Length: 174
Image (cartoon, one colour):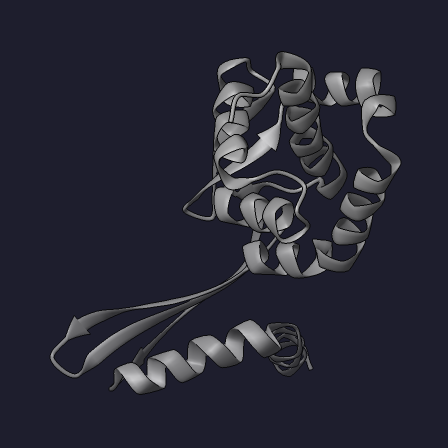
């Protein structure tokens, strides 16, 4: 399927609008999910749009929490400001709803990090981090004896990090 340049430009504008509204760096899979699950752009057109947006300097790669992410550049933000009225009302409503429903979970996904690696035959190092506004608030490393324990700790951290962090801080301060 060949799209004319006007249709392709409108699709690129949708991606820029999403990145502008979400206000946090997103990985390519996160952007893909947002666009595809809402049927805004087909997969192949999406890939072309991302490539073109990066080539034209509208979006840029950043490394955020050891992940390749995309953000809108100043040029991309200005483009959204100028051409936002070209976005169909239905599409902007879909993106705005997606952003309001998912911003916090996407932010938490990038600010709460839990990973582990094998350090010895029966030794795993679990790394738990909390980051806020690009400032490392906590970096805790634990040594555990099994992959199962490491996975359990990582899951618990991802689901309950706010509570664990506040209880830890409270315990250390009081």
